Amino acid sequence: MFGINGSELLVLAILAVVILGPEKLPEYAAQLARLVKELRRMATGAKEKLRDEVGDDIVDLDWKKLDPRQYDPRKIIKEALLDDFEDAVSAIKETPVTAVQQRAVGTKQITRLAVNEPAPFDNEAT
Image (cartoon, rainbow, N blue to C red):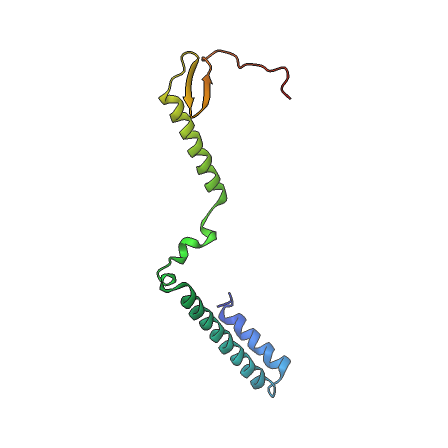
């Protein structure tokens, strides 16, 4: 229920009897019962309102897929980085660089350098 086992529940019940006293305990138990019934009624009303507004598609929704506890951010980032790396490696393997190559991509020219050719240097660049 709330992570309370049987012996802990028994200790809490004995403490409630000692602290509240036998004359006030039924009154507080009735208040607790009313509170639980009201919370259940509110939860049911919220479910019905959500179903009315969203439709019956919400019934077929797999809520376990949307649980954020199942996702490990480290794993997601690692997979994203490896996918980009694998795409880059496969793109390089498809087009071998043996000399300076130029090809048009849209309106932009891409120039590739040879394997041991140094990159151009711009003195005015910041």
